[in-house]
Image 1 (tube, rainbow, N blue to C red):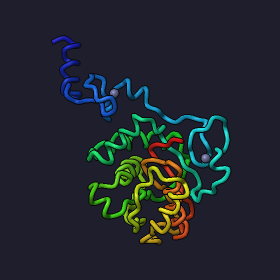
Image 2: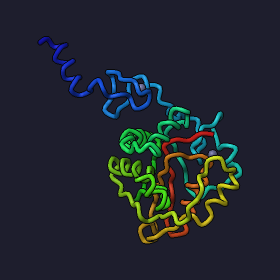
Image 3: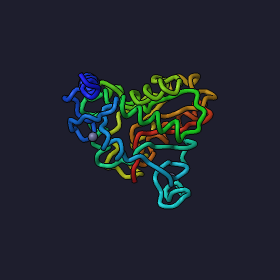
Length: 239
Ligand SMILES: [Zn+2]
Ligand SMILES: [Zn+2]
């Protein structure tokens, strides 16, 4: 066996032909250990500056965005990893509703990389945005908690999945106006164990930052429970 044949044989074991890229679903050779092919990895819609220094959404010019000029968010700062493109939307949809929970490995890894590059934050505890218990039973898992676990494992910060609970079964936020979202979220969250966040710097994790009303309401109740600061880190955002 020559060297090339040996390399090919090893590659066949490491990357069997029947593994498809999780994004383009093509069965190609150069798939990385997170299940993404080279072409998709290179084309990943990573958010790069300029971004709004408060909400983390992309802006045309350096500086605070139009929304943040009017809204006073409770959190210190929000950062998102990816643009919410149709491809990323579909991927997150498969993750949340398609029962493909193992995608958290890849999505979480993207979050780890971005966190290390872009978030110069000192955090004491990671808290995922909770689902209502009924919804979590239907889905089988909380997607934000899975992402939080991946991140927590890499950066060595404890994830607390019990401190923040969703006590109100809200209708999905998609399609609602900003005002309707705020109404929908009123009284939706509760801090069950304030001592777990008191005087702590909290890293709040969610999958998508849309208007920011969900993470802001979570931030509000965490601060009310005694948290010192809340930072928000989400997988994707869009305007
Ligand atoms: Zn691909
Ligand atoms: Zn902003």
